[in-house]
Length: 265
Image (cartoon, rainbow, N blue to C red; front, side):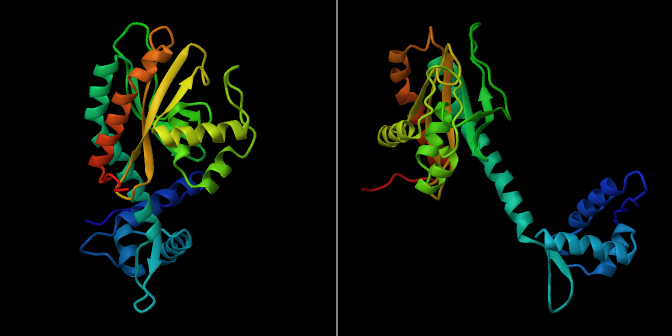
């Protein structure tokens, strides 16, 4: 069935153009992976000149590719890359959930799943502690990497150039316990790589401690971190170290589900 695209009016030209571009890309399917301007114009109910402008813009953005031999268009690599990114995040969150539930039962504290994103660490899933006095989180919550357990454990396993890029600028002092000296932070990252987990001892927020371990996928790269966060009166330094095994075991189990395999040294 043909999709009728919205004709642009004076007050909504930009919105209509975006909507039409989206409809254009949705026109492609497994059965019709390549379409010409005439076919696209017919399905969208737009003038050929309008469709040609939309297609040219999408080609420049990498969202479409043009077959030089036939002149027809197909979805571009950028669409695949975006789809793979979304799929990867969904897969990690889905595969991690049973282990997040187990980890919450083992520790009694709030657990979260986070990823690196544009130099920060972002929560993509969390399970809140059932205790009255608890630390909350939220999907989409962004925190700095240098003073959070999840952030530190993720950048610790990145290439040296990436570490320099992420922590090379001025580091914000969140609390009196925040490390803002890059040299000291690099030493801590080396320790994190050696022991396999990171801690946050009131560095992001006073009265809060956390611990996190890295999750790897089938490429062996660290793609996420699983963490446990709680108030300092319950999550003492000794207890923090005591639950390290639960956190690292959960991270390893999720990594195996994502295709990672133990390295043979």
